[in-house]
Image (cartoon, rainbow, N blue to C red; front, top):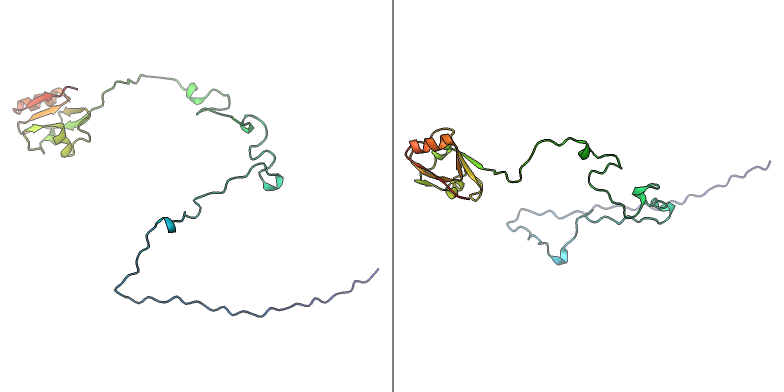
Length: 185
């Protein structure tokens, strides 16, 4: 056997470089504050991470996105132009078709904004209109339908304009000396 000769490796040391700390000037409390810089076209920058690099596909196996180009292998999902509708379950009968259909929902249902008689006591006007109800925060939209319900009682005699009244509300208004005027749609 041949004996291996050990070679001495000479290590060259680099001279150490002194790092000097850069001191920032300390601003003393002065009456003048530094001017704010406005964002304009010449100094506008996009935030970090706002733009993502495009995924390059089919550029060889070493890229990590080669061969099947991140689409898995074979089948409908690997083909170009594939399209599924919402709720597609791979050919199985979808959940929405397996569920029983019950009841009926009318397209012509009227949705009313509700106002109770006790809320109308806050208003001191002689004629209560939809605009007045909106101004007092009792309804959200003066153009939508309004219905007066008979919860509570009304103390003063007023004329109330609304699209619908409950029987009890109409009786309470008339018994207090007021009028229940129906607004035609």
